[in-house]
Image (tube, rainbow, N blue to C red):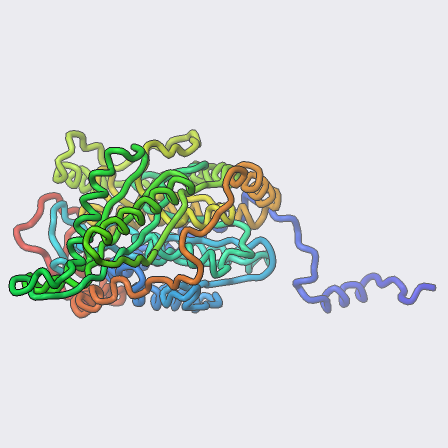
Amino acid sequence: MRLFRSLGGPAAAALALAVPLAAQPRAPLDRETVLREVQQEVLGMAKLVQEINDMVFSFAELGFQETWTVDYLTGLLAREGFRVERGCAGMPTCYIARWGQGKPVVVIMGDIDGLPETSQVPGLPCRRELVPGGPGHGEGHNSAPAVDVVAAIAVKRVLQRHRLPGEIRVIPGVAEELVASRTYMVNAGLFRDVDVVLSTHVDSDLRTTYGVTGTGLVSTLYTFTGQSAHAAGSPWAGRSALDAVELMDVGWNFRREHLRLQQRSHYVIVNGGSQPNVVPSEASVWYYFRELDYPHIRALHALGDTLAQAAALMTSTTVRQRVLGASWPQTYNQPLAEAMHRHILAVGLPRWDSADQAFARAVQRALGHDSTPGLRTRLDTVLEEAQQGMGGGSDDIGEVSWNVPTVRLRYPANIPGTIAHHWSAAIAMATPIAHKGALAGAQVIARTALDVFTDPALVAAAWRHFREVQTRQYRWQSLIPPGTPPPTHLNAERMARFRPQLATLRYNPRRYRTYLDQLGVAWPTLVCPAAVPRGPTR
């Protein structure tokens, strides 16, 4: 028996109007149209890209102390309708900003921290500190939030407009320069329900790759404890913790000759005692042990432990260690990289003008390069697999990449030939070069994210490659002992010392079009002035 008779004409129309919009069948989306739409959303926020870039540059906050940065970014995202959770994984400057619901879940993730001793007046082709001895963005991480936040907002608007399922999230790379946050995030389950991670990093080119790249590491602090005594009156009564530190370092430096060429290891003595006439009862040395894969990282760290114990035995002291951070090498997903590469080709490099090129060449000349090609104007059209080579740097996005299909975009916000972790890498980071490069990066990330949201086959292919290729030989294990809390005390004293000066230099976008305008730096300045130009600070 039919319980309902068919409705037609006005009755059918009335029923259709009564059905909630979310239940209405959607017209098939033309993916190319939606991709162009999200790209236009990004282009419409070019001013916001510039403001975020310059604002975070002016904060110049070190790892685990990125409080101004996080306050500012989460405020922007909350005003756009994102649900913000702060303090994730036991880190006050970690946050998760979410919009949407359902699958897929896409995370956009770039770094936000600066580096010690890299304070630099932007837009000058020479060394000029904003804050003497202060922190700065000597790797250009200030540009990543401009890429990430603007791309996320653009994607959110398109998802909302077309009522598309899925969730977009922004999670920052806290304290990446310490390689010290993402292991804690993974262990806390931040990526457990995530389908794809889109990582971003500053570069002088627009590119991506797939495969294993970089080194992994363990970052650990060895603290030796001895016995104090008067260094002149009764030195025989003392047991020098500093002697132990120095003997460990000497032993490690002799052992280097007999280590694999692929390893990289370095240290700083962070506590050498109080004053010369007191035998140091406590001293500490901080080591980075880098290698190409998990077994070799573990072995190198174990060798460091052996030398620390040997130094303690030689000096009748004791030693304890605190692992601060760790990472595996990065492994990037080929299907995601292939998709991202298509969007790189669609977006293209920024259109540099004569002022941009003239400034880039002035910086290259100032750094003593024989060749001064300026900024790149041609894209590599072929996607190439990554090569680890003989070692090099590390990045704890590696921890995420072994747990979720991940791809990294490198975007052209800096000048070829500048030196990473150096003041020269901050020169361009609040100039039109950074603004244009970040805008290009945001377009690529937004288009790639929309590709993931509108193509279930891409997500399936990414996970198939992740399981069958990327994690076939190794399954991720944490290099940080269970129960270890994040070292959020790092950089606290240093930032407390510099914050009063940095507060006077915060960018004020309501009064100044750009940070260069606020500082009184003309664009382009091709010869370094005798005095540092300094406009009104706020």
